[in-house]
Amino acid sequence: MAPTATSAAASAANAAAAASAATTKNEDNKQSPAAISSDFQTFLRMLTVQLNNQDPLNPVESTDFAVQLATFSGVEQQVRSNDLLESLLTQQSISALSQLANWVGMEARAAVPAAFDGAHPVTFYSDAPSAADQATLIVRDDKGREVSRIAVSAKSGAATWNGADQNGAALPAGNYRLLVEYRGDGEVLTTKPAEVFAQVSEARIANGKPVIVFATGDELPADEVSAVRAPQG
Image (cartoon, rainbow, N blue to C red):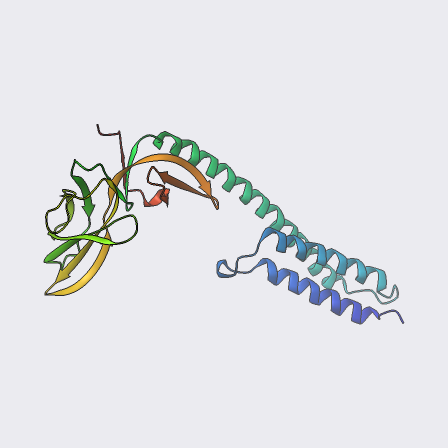
């Protein structure tokens, strides 16, 4: 038996309400363009079923039909808006990448391993908590092993590591990760990765965001770079 006008109208109204709710989800429940497009197609199918099955002598109320058409228009606009935003984000990423291309071959300051050449001291930068009264530089090799632990200034700014372990013995050339442990009144306040200047070898887009690749092989989002300079001889 064909569905009555009342049941068809109720089903379509429910589908319209679901589609409308889907298009107004907040940012904490983001919807993909594919999901919105699916809702759009579902609404069209439900609306067609309703029109095909309603009783010509007792059609859907004009006010209900107007609401459904308004919902239809809203879903369609949401699909178009998402397509436009995706296009704008793509263009923005391309623009950011073209600007970051100028960083290739430069030196960028970030929390990446320091390339120690076996002879020259390494300059590192740290941001000390205001309550810190002691600081310790912790040096780890490329395997994560601690190879040095020496006292340094508890003030923010630049400092140097001479490439030696805590006993003063020279360490071999290689990549070393530097961390600074800050203490206040004898208690550990925090341990932060120190920033160093490292050569930039590549700039690319990953997951829609600009990423910097360093000569050490490390990758960081471009917004985690705090400074850029010309290569130092």
